Length: 190
Image (cartoon, rainbow, N blue to C red; front, side, top):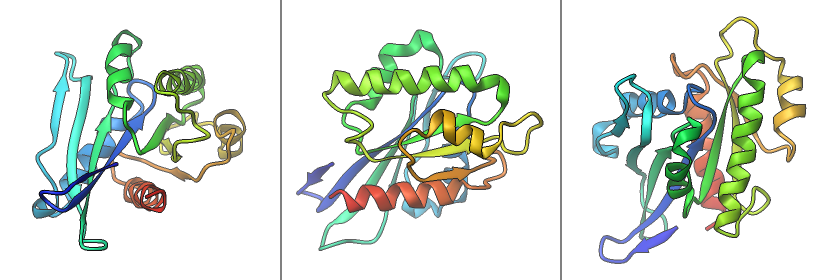
């Protein structure tokens, strides 16, 4: 969080983290498509020729003033692919809150676990940890066959028992519920 005194804004950074093709970019695209354009900036996205996120997606959105200052949220996603680890390190820097977007498919559990371990490693670079940074879990792709059960996902991924949401980012199910909760926990830390 930083305060932009000139514009009387409190700026928060929220990062959507998780394995490649888990739905991080789809979350931001859905949010951007449904928000009033006066409340958000253009969605900036860097993609590879295969249409996968190369570096990050970024979107800025504002809400009504609190204590005379407008809160502004910068929403980022990280590249999920292992070869872009340096980009993930840069994007996670200064995060005020994190949404971990897990792919609910049973076959993706190893990637979810590896991404969660990578998140902890990247946070440690900045002397932070999942015990110190507010975060929530989103179990995405709940509409697909062969999804792990919620109790199974909880026992394997949600070791800190943080709030979680079931989602189908493609159609928006659970997307705004996740966003509202992460904003709530971000603001509660200020």
